[in-house]
Length: 204
Image (cartoon, rainbow, N blue to C red):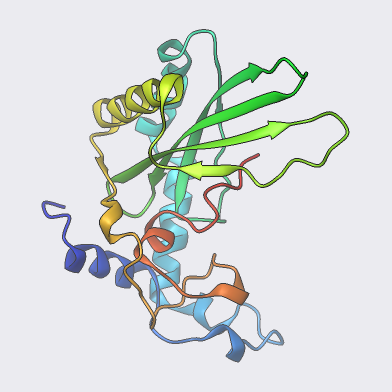
């Protein structure tokens, strides 16, 4: 893919997601559902199978990632079939004087559909006896998290040859496409959630 234009990315989305098949018309007496029987959905499934079973570059990337971040926990946090990306995560943790812990996750999301990636950061404060609030997600971090994010982005580009997803195109709507992994109650596809994922802050 030579051009990261809106038109080029929309074409990729159309290659993997069928036009039509609104969720409210799903017939759950049928299995698989109608949209799951389309050539586009089959290509999406094939992309996942390849990513899980036959993506040597990603396996090599993960195997070497710990050496890039010595002293930090590094994990594969991919949730297969739940998005359109594989993910890795570098964990940073800070203890506060009041006993709380601030957990920062620097995440690399790598598309299985296009040679694109996105690095972002989530932060949450953990207090004993309290249910954690939803993590805060940002694409613009500071301090140690920013250094880790920059290093992770550079390593993805070095090892995989991928390019950053253009965030200025993240919210481009794809109103006619059925993106099967989206929450049915908010099925308003965009380029970001079609080519990478919807709930990027949802991490193991």
